[in-house]
Amino acid sequence: MLKPIQKITLDNGLQIMLKEIHTAPIVSHWLWYRVGSRDEIPGKTGASHWVEHMQFKGTPQFSADELEKMVARTGGVWNALTYLDWTTFYETMPADKIDLALQLEADRMVNSTFDPDEVASERTVVMSERQGRENSPGFLLGEAVRAAAFRVHSYHHEVIGDTADLESMTRDDLYNHYRAYYRPNNAILTMAGDFETETVLRRIGELYDAHPLGEEPTRARREEPAPRGEHSLTVEGPGETTIVNVVYHSPAASHPDFFPLLVLDSLLSGPSGLNLFGGGGISNNTSRLYTALVEEKNVAVDIAGGLPATIDPFLYSLHLIVHPQKTAAEALAVLDGEIRRLQDNPPTQKEIDRAVKQARALFAYGGESITNQAFWLGFSEMFASYEWVTKYIDCLAAVTPADVQRIAQTYLQPKNRVVGTYLPYNHSH
Image (cartoon, rainbow, N blue to C red; front, top):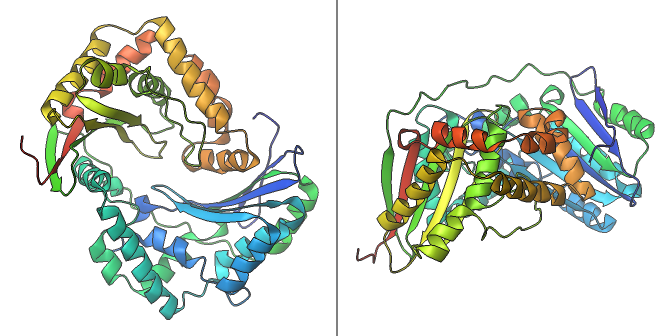
């Protein structure tokens, strides 16, 4: 993953990161915008995700149908993702067809029409997407837990937005959001694959030089106050399964404690890849929590953990599917026992080595494809810098058993967490 990369900034502020990889005649092209649900205020939640949808609805130059057909004809793939801190659009195509990707992204950065009829039909789409998620107990629980964990900071709401806002937002609300954040000086263009840097840079200049430098977008900077004690909540709904979601306030990805916490997660719940874009599946059944909760005590049927990489402090999340014959309290007691064990005694070096090795393997799987290489270029710049990726392995390898114990003692405290339980309506306990 350590080939030299070219990093250039145009006069209008557009950052460009290019990585030539001549292993296959493929290019992956990504355009990242520094805007996500973190930039939304009540009344406008879900705007970033909805604007991302509108970017597929065409411009005066390219109609939506035309774009769809043109991309399909190249044999390429294209899609987009909206997250807490960013929105990104990508195309992975045969190298000789990549100019289409460059054209369409340069065009829709400034020329999306936001036709009122399209806005109305997309409102229905986004709202039904939201309703679909509400059929998932995990989503309902996660949303309640997140809202409890963040009272002030805008990580409070889900990326999809609140139903009330999806009903009330106007075409102009969305268009103004687009105009404010979709600007060259708020974007990074990343490419990896089979191209010549000089040729591509010339082409990017032709397409983007006329795009004006925008004002710096305003950001809602509201720091979350420290929690004042453990918060517990219950969500009730349909289904058969009791779920427990425990979240601990955790450091931003750029914080030195982030890497020891990744190793702790690998040790406790199995490695989780930070690459939102696929990666190799590594079984978590050697992890401490799986062993204790599922195999030994039989209080859960599955466990998972995760630590997203974010700009601001976010949440380290543990997810337990409770055994049908057991209660949430029984599962939580075993979980707490395992956390105390880690706080009282540092793990062995052998355990750390295995946790690091697994986390590293997952990172390697997530970096192999050309699409993934282009992903990492931009993703890392959203919350840190590409250096964060190049140093990833070294930072993991530097973590000691004492570090992991200290992290457990510092962050995995009851007062630093929210415990959410999903109880099915028909629950008899």
